[in-house]
Length: 385
Ligand code: LLP
Image 1 (cartoon, protein in one colour):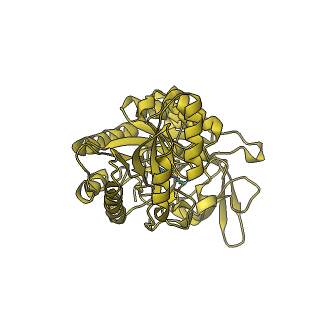
Image 2 (cartoon, helix red, strand yellow):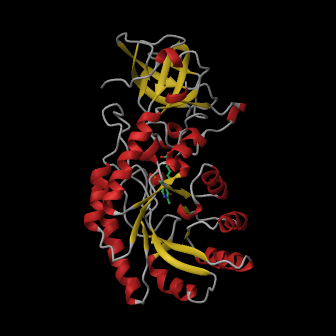
């Protein structure tokens, strides 16, 4: 497997750890998503939760994407970066009054609503402002995403969305809420889904539900299929861009959209993951009992995915072409889970080598914490260093 290409002369003088974003790859990815969605008239709302770095958001907004937000602050960040309110959707099981009011004040496109009490609160707050809030019902489709249990969301045991058996009650309730306008249904089955055929049962469920709503005299102009398309963490250099052609084609072939109906998507990871790397230096190489530790200056506070989900990120020593040796690659945090990989083959490593943790553009920088009073890593961009 070949290593990624990094402008090492420019990067080695920067204080580590930091996030490095390949803006050319981001723009290439956005171009392909735009082309593929345009083919079918699909609308893409970038899932801000994957990476809310201001510069990244601005580039995505400039390309004409909408935004999928899950907090009031994400709505504010999306607005500040230039996403139009008319392309912002807002999901989440626990939207507070304050967050709902922020979104109402901006007149966002749609609330993806997850419970009856939330519907009532949005109605009440919209009434106070004399507004009509557009909502889509997030429905839990009970479709298995075949992914890590922590990032599976579409099973009936998960906390997300309305249970399909409760929909009659919900429709009845909506009929009584004067400041709510039902414009669609919303789904999201999970994340890091590598096999696109996993989305076929979701399409089948949507087709069934379309009939359910039509039988009750309800036409829904918008169908939101969520996000979830995975990326290749094993070999990001060989596969820097996910198979968007197959992904959107699957929905085009399997979804029975009605005339005038629009399909929306909320991809996050596959838009930004591969363009980002966490750059870190080796502080020490330590001899253990029958093993060597490469101790990095980045830790779980900078990239928590390995500690939290046992996630794999490819690690490259970009300073060394020496023969490989095995290392446990660890961070400096006082937790045993602060381990990026065990028995990992790196080109022979010494103190000061620059290491890249690949595929870290999604759920990397945004999930950083200050545990141990550490600083949040800075970000640098390929076109501005
Ligand atoms: N829409 C909704 C309603 C979601 O909950 C999510 C992700 C997305 C869209 C975007 O999904 P994506 O296209 O990025 O798979 N922190 C975890 C991932 C959590 C995903 C949460 N929801 C990780 O690092 O793997």
